Length: 137
Image 1: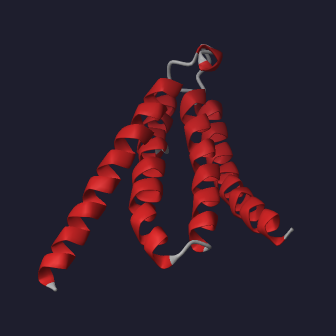
Image 2 (image 1 turned 90 degrees about the vertical axis):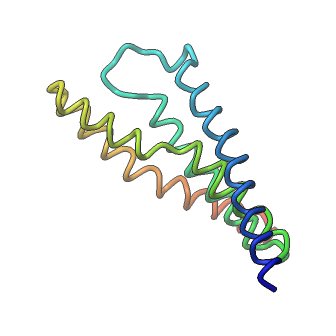
């Protein structure tokens, strides 16, 4: 029994690590998208990563909630914890907010915090709603 628990934990750890690599790589590439390079005080790439990651985690959580237990157990670490965790950047969000405040960009910092805190849960709700409304049709 103990041997299977260790293997299960190792598998989950590897899945989280693999998902984080891909999610983190996508997040980094978003920072280099020309359309997001506006020169403003607002960190648009991070906002986009947080909103898209929140939408995606809602969609994936909804789909996994409807999946078989074995599928849910094997994909949750990879997709939710790993990929979405690597993609969404609330730790960077915190540092960027502090940097904006330190630079005297109080209005931009307040707008950034407000948009992120209001729209991220709304995007996750939308993802869940889309999964459950489509499956009822």
